[in-house]
Length: 279
Image (cartoon, rainbow, N blue to C red; front, side, top):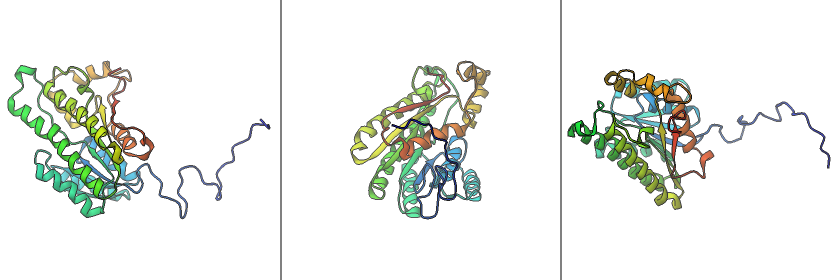
């Protein structure tokens, strides 16, 4: 056997670099050729996901409550060469959620992947001090909303693409006691359970369902929390081995991988994207 080491040959016109599209080849990109539905896409992690998914080749449908934010992100995606549309959607309104998923299919003819990112927050309080109205809001948006979306997404994937993937946005706060945001953590922990149950139910059909559990991330939501909890960002940083908060784009990267065919044997998992905070 000849064990003589060989010198790598640099790419030429006849030997393109890995991942480079050529004439007649399949389009490049982690989500190339896929149609993606994203909730909470007007800002934060959802907006970062819309930009990233489009760069990775997906046609994206952005959904959120605030049209001005949706329009701005949609125009940004288009200006960068991506394909994007938007729909105003209130996760607390079941009809609105179903209509948003249906619009994706009407616009693009199919649904391949979905990122259920949208959520709301309330001021921090101990368990016995959480107002019932706050608890009910968190239930309607952060738990019932993803449940409604998953049901509609599974139906759309079945009817069009046949197989696909769904990612739910949870929280590292769902994996342990959450004394400042107990109701928020409870809803996110329930999302983890729904994710696992859906993965078991729809896996035989080729529909994968996973969740991500972000740690401290620099979004409007965490800044709102910090206003009620002085020193919050410093505490989060001190308890994170990487010694910093995440950028929303870093969380979007994890969602993109789980939605892509690169994670084809991953389902039913809650992936921590927390800089080691829960280690």
